[in-house]
Length: 236
Image (cartoon, rainbow, N blue to C red; front, side, top):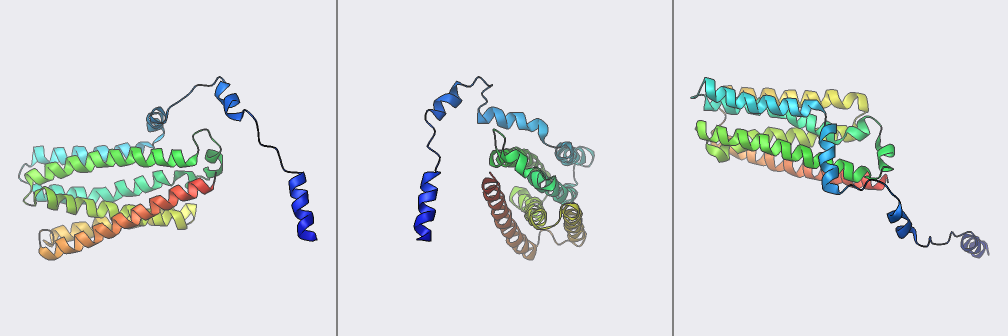
C-alpha cells in the first residue's frame, strides 16, 4: 500500500517535459563560442609558472649547447633535473579547480567543468610536448645517447612525477598537496642528478629501469586524468 501511494504521489507531482526548450535556448541572443575558440581563450588562464618553467627548460637547453657544444650529457642531466618541476606545475594546473574549491561553481558554467579540465589538459599537454620534444631532439643530436635514449631519460622523470602529483592532489588536503608534490619533484630531481654523476645513464640496467618507471608513470597519469574527467562529469 505504501509503495503504491509513493508511486502515485511521484506521478502526481511529476514535472511535465518542457516543450520547445532547445528552440528557445537557440533563440537567446548570446555570444556563441565554439569549443576550439574556447580552448584558445583558456590559454590566458593558464598560470604563468607553466610558461616560465617551460621557457627556462627550453632556453636552458639551447644555451647549454651554444655555450658548451660538447656537453650533451650535461644537457640531458639539466633537463631531467628540471622536468619534474614542470610535471608538478602541470598536475597542479589540472587540479586547480579542486585546489581552490571552484569545482561546484565551474560545474554550472556554460562550458562546464569537464570541458574546462579537458582544455587545461590539452593546452598544458601540447606545451609540454613541444618543450620536451624540442629538448630531446637537441639532446639526441649533441649527446652520445641518441634521440631514443635521451627521450627515455627526459620523459621518465616527467611522467613519474606527473602521475604521483596527480595522486597527491587527488587525495591530500589542499594545503599539503603542493608541498608534498614539490617534495616528490625535488626527490626525483636529486635522484636524476646522482644517477648522472655516478654514470648510471647509458647502462643496460638503467635503460630497463627507466622503461619500467616510464611505463608505470604513463599508466598512473592516464588513470588519474581519466578519474579527474569522470569526477568532473559527476559534479555537474
